[in-house]
Image (cartoon, rainbow, N blue to C red; front, side, top):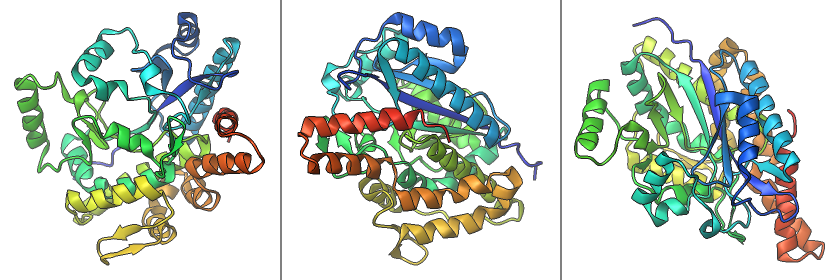
Length: 377
């Protein structure tokens, strides 16, 4: 077996830009705002599909400490520039009350092409996610880990949930963002492939038939990146708390190394059918960490806290290797305190019980999101 990959780390986050007075998203932010961000952050910031959003990406990081410093700088810079324009970034899977049909598409060729292809499905994409890239240069290893790591995607999603509201309504889901995203083609739990060659042949069929231009149009929850030699995890909501982002990114990185260790020892994680993984995916989307996930080995629903403890035992060696034991064990704190979805709902309910109107309660949720987005770890 080839030598151990470096498992380098990169994190991308998408934010809403909101008006500090109205708390609604800014459908048409000034061009000067993005220009200022680009001048300060270079290629680490870019517009998103909708003009009311902005995306950042860390550098390639060798450690979680590097990623933390970069994310703090990126979030802080976006917040500072936005404040000069009466705006603020919000890190959440959905905005509590923004109307998707009031949004404008960014005037770039790629986004215009997407809008023409996806039509109403694309125009509804008023959602923000977090993507974690882990460097795995060996193509065959990347496909092997893709197959095995899919099992853990619902566990990561449950910890990240930050989108309980949609257009002013409590959806009853902890991650409504995923329901919106799943309207698009080529989303969800990834396919399973026997080799890198098989994966490439399937992509070539889609490209050859003119269905997609390249593999960037595969929007699975986990995919081999088409731009970088990485495995890219995409299932998670954008985390409001930077600490939560770092904890989930560390968990994903450690899980991949744990699976690599199994392979090195001629073992592997058991592969389960996509239909089974999708049941856990739905439970994570619907309940977050509240109602547990299925342990398919036992054939029963297990409390999330128990599953988390099992994962922490599995990856302890890897967390020590990367020096991120504190960050992975912080997942216990997310569980005890609640995810962003829990905390948004708590702010909403508390404000209503204090006699506020529904609109005022939703504004209070936005105010909490603004503050929490730029809170330093």
